Amino acid sequence: AQSVTQLDSQVPVFEEAPVELRCNYSSSVSVYLFWYVQYPNQGLQLLLKYLSGSTLVKGINGFEAEFNKSQTSFHLRKPSVHISDTAEYFCAVSVAGGTSYGKLTFGQGTILTVHP
Amino acid sequence: NAGVTQTPKFQVLKTGQSMTLQCAQDMNHNSMYWYRQDPGMGLRLIYYSASEGTTDKGEVPNGYNVSRLNKREFSLRLESAAPSQTSVYFCASSADRSRAFFGQGTRLTVV
Image 1 (tube, rainbow over the protein chains, first blue to last red):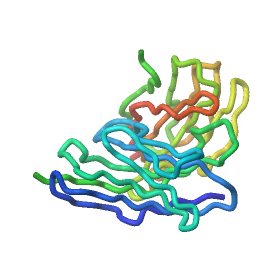
Image 2: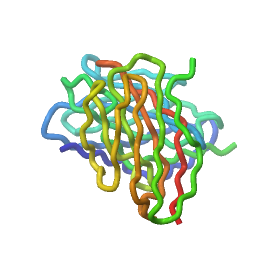
Image 3: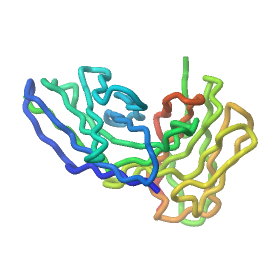
Image 4: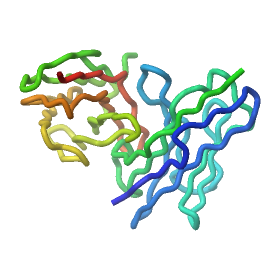
């Protein structure tokens, strides 16, 4: 079985400041890693994913994440946030090698609030 | 391009009532999923269907049933609703080796 832990339930930050949202995972098998964003009263949108290859992954809206296998982490970063980045962010994993990338184990979520 | 469409968007049920949440996708995806979202717990998989005609239990299947009616549609049924099933329900779909697309959610309250 897999488990995902997001280390911060809420992260407040000022506009134009950098931000890091932390995610650790546990799995006895190889996994694929994902970050999703949920804006208020909406569904989830994919920010970025790691399947294989380069451990630094770039996504939409200026976000990036780094896969660290030894620390079993997949932290999300953005060098300068905007008010519009205010949302809830979810880290998720799926078993590598499968074809159903939507069969996901999610973390608890981190609410990012960007203040002016 | 509608993507994943869920109906209804909101529903209030009394304890013991039954209802079916509908989900349809227009992307010709093989796999479909039902998740529930509860505060502080992220999303948890209820059931999934890897292809038309197959369904499998996820992490929290108790109290739910599903039907993969055809390739487009995947419904979730609550036979006897309980307050513990108050949640936001998300349907999702994915093609093989491709990311999941999520619907807008159904907010269900059981009183």
